[in-house]
Amino acid sequence: MSTGRALRTRERVAIRAAVVFVLLIALGGGLGLASEGIEGRTALRDGPVGTLTPVDRECGKEFCDWIGTFTGTDGTVTERDVELRDAVDARRDDVPPGAIDGVRLAEGGGTAYTADYGWHAPVAKGAALAAVGLAVAAGLVLMLRRHRGAAVSR
Image (cartoon, rainbow, N blue to C red; front, side, top):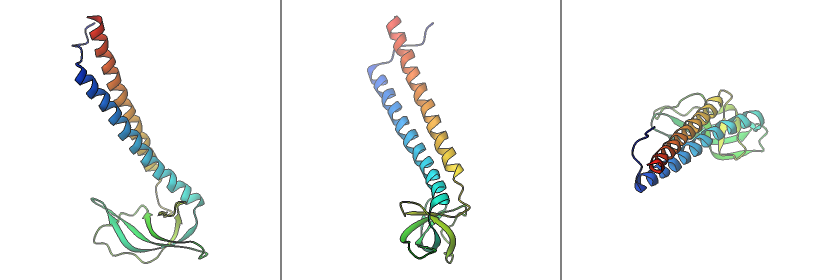
């Protein structure tokens, strides 16, 4: 069975570099997304409850996240520059809401989550990104081996 011509050294190096790149992006991005979802789930379960008072926003291409001061219900926890994660997409021209009650602070203190935060989606997207990346990398490795076998059999 012929599998095509043997790969040149430059092509083998490029494929190996592509495998490493795909693995870094897929696993890094996948684990990053999944860890955000897991952090949200943990905060919603165990984090201190309080109020977030938005004072600023941090915007991406389409939507913004509110940045504000978190104050615990019992007054013992106060954190500044806390990013709010919730199910409502804020826009650049939205007026900051007043104090948002019932938010939970994550362990590191930099992020707070509302009860409507959907932690399932980031975990699923992270797992899917990692799985697709691993499949692409495995396909590249198999292609490299297939062409190596063609060079040996000639």
